Length: 339
Image (tube, rainbow, N blue to C red; front, side, top):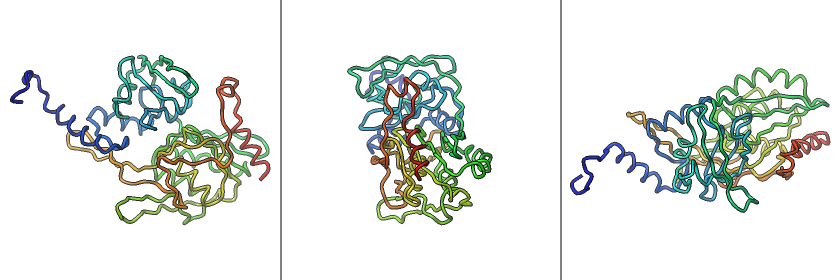
């Protein structure tokens, strides 16, 4: 304030926000972040399930900004973005190596009908390719139920939103009466609320089974979350589909079903987003999103950075996608028919 040549243009609020972001950034945890009032609004819109953008969940892996999952039916999926894509730049000049997750989200979001340009690097490519994507209103469904013959139910869960609880109750009777075997598809499911994952697990596990363990570190006592539902679907034979876009709450459900019931996981290794964030809202409507715990599966396996390895590994190739083939789903049906 005393020495800077442009002292008359100093923005003290921006300086305070910058100082806080620097302090939080020193923790080297991509999920512990400071959110300005505008960023906080974007975050709250996101978890409400409706916003304007392109429809991708992003995260940090190997210090690179990656697509965790393109959401079904969104501009991102229609443009061809895939789980595992590395976002190099946003709109030509914003290199993502310099951005936090929330800063990247702010740049990718925008008014309906406007365009964002993403420079994408994918495994097997020699150089990045540009994807020009028109933003739209994103309304994320919670689930989809189909039947595949021979009383096999195919249950696709898109995200663990509050809406999933009531939507699941709406289809549960049909699921109970019309199926003997269930495929739970958690591919490209970026997660959501912990308590919703515990609620859904309660339909498939016996009451009192451990769903997930929260480890707060530093010698603090762990918190154990147990199934508390009706267990009405416990008698059904189940397999679970996972891939690199299976993250957070979806990894909790997959791990709980495998550890408690020996349910087979089919597909590819999950993302490994196994930490718990708590939002602390501040008086000027900014907020701090703080990692307060790590998630462990019922048998004590760490999810963060590790992910879940499939019991039956089946890759989905570019050719499969181009030809609208799904060998992972085909394998799930085959495995169920042999159970």
